[in-house]
Image 1 (cartoon, rainbow, N blue to C red):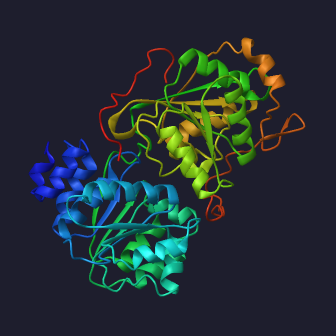
Image 2: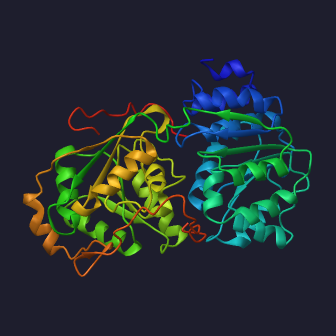
Image 3: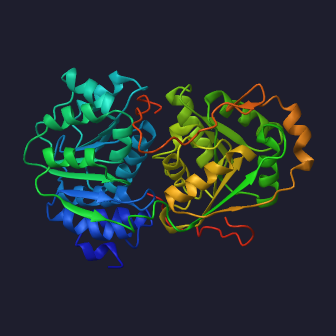
Length: 428
């Protein structure tokens, strides 16, 4: 199938898709939309950046009428992802008369209540705020016809499983449910067995392929103080067009933003200490031309921004799967991208661990860091994974067979021959 017209969609939906430059469905859209339009429950395992948002919104809009009220509930793990899906739903539904509302923590609940009292057709939100609104009697799910759990594995990791089960328990038994996830662990399957009928299971892409094959992976060893020289050398040599740089801590993200600004680069930061208005401002600046977004892991999942050319790990992620989530911000919707990581000599074993677990190859590149050594000494930035000049977490990747507690809720290239994305496809 090479056109959305072949799905038999209503003309008003096709009009919106054409205006959004949606011409050819992605693999997940091609496989999921026909089944969803038939009313099937779905469990879809698909990597990030493959077009999952369109895969559930398009058939839902096709199955709804302009008079439907509170007919669809979409649950997502982060406010950024909720806002993103909300924006897409507005664009896709603008000729249908179907209204959406987005609810999430960190924003005015009174305003969200006012929006809910206008009886929108689609409610999009994060588990905590949805639960709060339900307990206040402002969100009644008894008439829901469609339920979507997006990024289900992230909600599991963030400790939302009990909230999700409670929310689902308040929806009608007879409804259509769709679950999308990059991985499908046993706990998600148990959830599906409890709240779904006989779901169709779609596996998009090879199971062992954790990242898209349009990302090239590289790393460099920091030879100067505090990794800043390696970062500046990479930027100077490879000239990344639009990049997300991941730092380990909120303080480190702020300081790194100041470093780049002091060197004449446009940069903005996003992390959990910022207010929602500040986070949205940072994202708006990045979308509208700022070259660098410095982020903690709050941005590792869910952000869908056009034309991110490079993801840079200034600090090595805490485990291989976090690496996968981070680099998935690049190479969206078939575009090409680059993932670059800065390491110390004593972190080289961790590079091997990432390669083994994620089944990728990372090429070591050499950078001329000498011109930037004084910057590293003078800018006042320190690598937060160090203390008193000594690495404090020598075992960054513990044995994966051991049990580990989920993080707290709410925080949530090959060398040479670079390829650039075509930039023509929308990245939902």
